[in-house]
Image: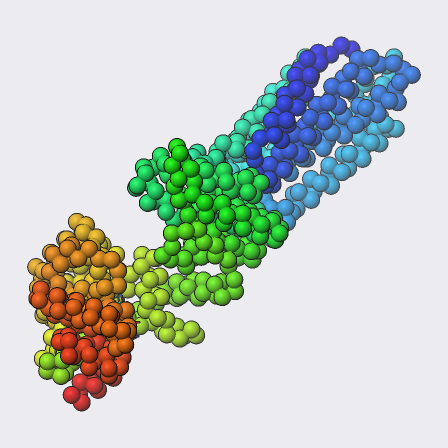
Amino acid sequence: MNYNINFQIAALIIVILLLYHFLTQKKLYNINARTFTYVLVLGGLYILLDLLSTLVFMNYRAEHETVILLVITIAYLFDVMLPYILYCCVCIISGEKQRKISGTSAVCTAITVVMLLLILGNIKSGWFFYFDESGTFVTGSGYIFLYIYALAYAVLVIVSAIRNRGENITRKMGIVGEFLVLEGVCMVIQMYTQRLLLTGFGLALGLVFLYLTINNPGDYVDSITGVFDKQYFDKWIEEKLDKKAEFHLIATEFYMLKQVNKVYGSSVGDQMLIQAAQGIQEITGSSQVFRITGNCFLAVAESMAEYETNKQKMEEFFRKPFELNGEKIDFPAVICGIMDGGKMKHEDVILSYIEYLASLIKNTDETVVIQSDDRILEGFHYEKEVEQFLKTAVEQDLFEVYYQPIYWNKEERYITLEALSRLRHPNMGMIPPDVFIGIAEKQGMIAQVGLLQFRRVCRFVKEHEYLMKTLKNVKFNLSPSELLKTGHIQLLINMIREYGLSPRYFQFEITETVATEYSESFCQAVEDFQKAGIGLCLDDFGSGYANLNTVLKLPFSVVKMDRSLLTGVTCDEQAAVFYRSIVMVMQNMGYHIVAEGAETKEEVDLLQTWGVDMIQGYYFSRPLPENELLKLFDKE
Ligand code: C2E
Ligand code: CA
Ligand code: CA
């Protein structure tokens, strides 16, 4: 019998080219890529054997019958293996994890093994096929089972595709469907013509499609830097965590990217990122580099030794300025080292830990390395726990308000209070407000916290309105994001009305950093306060780099001198002169001055001789819970 083997040869060439291409291209060594490599190799072998067996077929000689039968048997063994392998691949790409080997897969494995044994046994039994005396290939009574077997797998694949429907999977399963149709058509043509051997060719085409869909690495490469993108990182890390594999991470965050963009233009920023990515790739010598955010890359090390050397090399690399068009530009980074990333168990945790590590480095303009250790990890877990508790606290309104009285030097009595938030954790104890307010700001919950707290303050003032005969007002802190949130100020004003209280009972404290951000929503907020007759106080004056000109245009009546300015005034003449001068200047401009953080008699004496209007500090009183505050005022 004469067969047309052209298609088989073409198929073999296609698969070899594909294999070459796939192995030499940049790709991630994950389970998908590995599975695909196996499928390619097996597919290639199958086609090769198909071709070989056709050739021996066509040159049948009785004296070589045993060899020929052997070759053909091996080819059929592959015929049986292939549907099984494809089925396994489908299970893998559709996410059915290997550990959850289902009943179906067990049955499939068993049936495939039986089929393999039967094919081997065919050499003796001739149940599937044999050669008659004239040397003609004769199909036996069992041959039909080969078709049934292949068909059963096709059905199984379709069923499993339908069962695992999902956004991502549907696309991948679509290609499996096309694969099946292609192979089916080839099989029908082959059966019909009996001459054109097309199944191998169909397989090769199917592999090309599969390659384009499942393993298109271009899908996951960051378009600017050429390293892998966040999407690929998601897949990669999921697999690593799943396998509980050991790996170490080095994250590099370029905190100056924004400035570089501003100063030199964003195309220069892009160039810097490209150079940085190349540098990291060269140092790590691997393709396992990801860009996980706009200004952060992540490199992976498999061993501790590799991790240590790479970390050190990166530090050296990023300490030197980059060169661009003959100009030297600094591109410093925070390099965060995390050993044994697998211990963190979840991708989200790893990513927020990187963010946390980077946030620990402040006020620097050179490359620094921060290495994760037990203490830092503890701090991170503490913050995470607070974050978690904060949600409950907002839901169940678990906050408290303490009030710190502020002393008026002129009449030697308390004239105002600052309301300060408190949050007590059942096990962790008091959580410092700096911590939970900061987290609430980051998590976008601060407005909710502020409203809950302000309601508490209103209720307290309403219940003890007689206090307002001696007190000028109660001061309440506003975070920048509260101030800039549209409609939030109106909610606060409405709450005052709801309790039927006078707006002059309240003064809102705003820090100098936000006062410098002269945005539209900020001006709106200030206008709202003014219209409602509510006073404003400039908080933490002298702690940042406020643009005085801007700040002083705003309608503050009170300025609070930051506690940091007070340090050293009793022993350092310079500090004392500085403090006193600012007090004088601000008073000349018509502001009332509150000195924050006075703890000792010496400090208080000095502040009083300098003519400071009011003093807030532990020397007079710590922030107090409601009942203690009431006791203090009863005594007065
Ligand atoms: P702040 O507005 O500067 O509040 C003054 C802080 O100084 C308070 O810290 C107070 O307890 C502390 N303090 C007062 N006198 C002394 C002293 O003599 N020595 C020392 N060492 N400290 C003194 P607290 O209560 O821990 O609050 C910290 C920060 O948390 C506040 O700083 C404020 O920025 C923020 N905060 C507190 N409650 C709220 C709130 O309800 N809303 C908002 N947005 N922020 C709040
Ligand atoms: Ca304050
Ligand atoms: Ca303050």
